[in-house]
Length: 162
Image 1: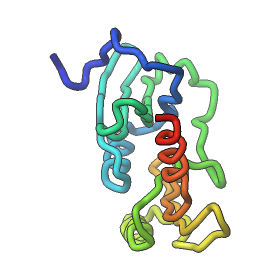
Image 2: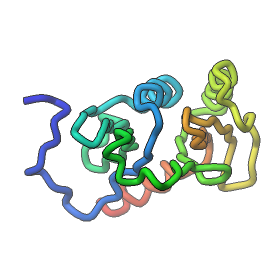
Image 3: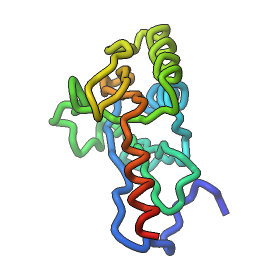
């Protein structure tokens, strides 16, 4: 069985937030950007009569998967062809919590070298923490944070339930 093929007979034990979807202009550039600048991996990629699709995320969260779904439609089959490609910006963003301030600084340094840095590392008031922002090839903002506490809160709540 193909490791990347969707399995339709496995369902979550309860409703789950599973993905955010973005329409992109160049799926290859977007996959390359997210697999270079974020900890996401390419989990699945496909093509059909409407265009290209890909799922990016982590392969270590089987009980709570959360994916970035990207789609590049073919011009003749784009169901949204009369609409501009929506962008998460200037405040709307995807957030990635990192393990240290140094990791945020490293993300900013790498992003700056690639021309993607939009906000240098900055200490923000609680609960925001230490953050920087990069933009992806379509101009979507991606926040890299440390000490924001999203992961800690989610883990604490999950452990409390078990």
